[in-house]
Length: 585
Image 1 (cartoon, one colour):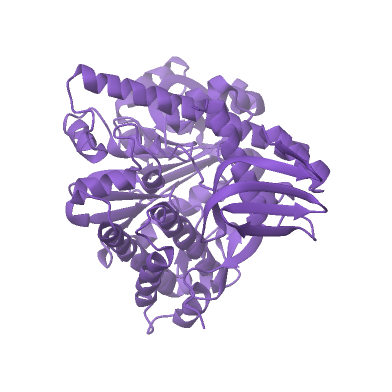
Image 2 (tube, rainbow, N blue to C red):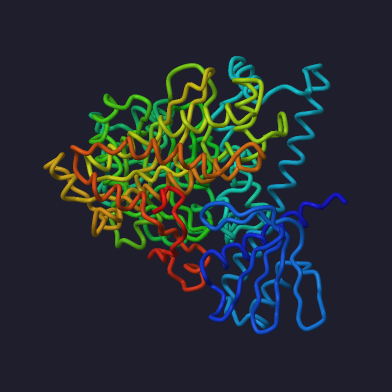
């Protein structure tokens, strides 16, 4: 039976909720969890929740199949909806689910429903177009993308941003975007590929704090808004004002309509903040509030007071200062590891008001990530998602494009090159600078070429973790204003790398590949373990502690569901799981 998009979305959410509750030990004391003969049973006081599973992977991740069943005494019912599951968890398993979290979960399901419907429609349009133009219907994604890029009809990276259909692979709130309506989700989420006009405003210079890593003090006017500079001059002149008295501020249209015109009403009336008729066409990247400007080599990270996954997405004033400084300070490493770039952030600005208000009117300019060489660029999160061109997962399409087959050898070759290209420079950043970049799949892009050639770029320094003494030893004059970047100890820095790269990047790829009978998950992690071990230089700082943390018997993973249940969005709550890089006794 063919499922509707809402049915697919609902069962996905049920599986995510159950898996998260098992992994994060959310069920009450006395609960027994059994995995046997293709079944997973959760038992508590004579009540049983069960589901078919086709496997268990690293980091306590189950591949669930089909509906959940609930049994009490001799009665068994099939769980039909997410709401029914939440009610069973509360009433029968004594799990307290806050009303707000229930709303967030239901909103996430709606997001999946809209996304699945959009992808089905896109797939149909593309295949109809191929038939009409007599292109081969079995055209490979990478061959198609190279063809479209050569014709200048497609931006490979930007297109891939719209293909990470599942979002965060295990987070139940992966598609939550409260309080957006359906129409607003379709207008602003990256899956829908809509052109989004960013509002250009002017803010009086004494009311703004700007940080520029560029040598040009008028970077925004001379670089980002070069084509609009004259129009802005004429506009300001008509108001009997001078452009040189103002800085440029870029605002997301949703933020303008729902936040700025209300909270900065007095500033607008006093012309301390001026809306202009100029807009910048953009498209959303995977992070939702970071916008890729069209036909310009810049991305803009913006505050949008919307809860995307767990947190409301604003831009703290300190990140507008740290981003430009750090992104330029760390460029020296690129000479040693040319296969990994860090996207520069040449400019940041925030309103000069109290922190909570400033985070609503702020932005960071990031150079559009660009990787030299031939091939196709994708955000790495898209690798484990299907594409509408050949209906294969993108990483599978790559193996077929490179080697014409998906086999044990091609998969091992891919994992080996991927890990060998990505892991050593990130370990070197920890050893040389005491900094772990948040190089998870949303923040990392890769250019994939023929013969397994790869190069990476990491964007967004806002989630980095820094051991300040190590960084200051290398860069004595560096200042870090964002206290949330500074780790209490080097172990926290290593944990950031472990979560972003080992659990997310390598974990997701390994989880995908182990669906093939020829692949043993342990063999994949043995390759990753070997590369990680060899990446640690015993003559550099932190070598021993890196080995101790990365190859321990267990590792900590973020308890994303528990954090929402306990209202701890900004403070990490962790759970321990078996570490796939542990070699054993």
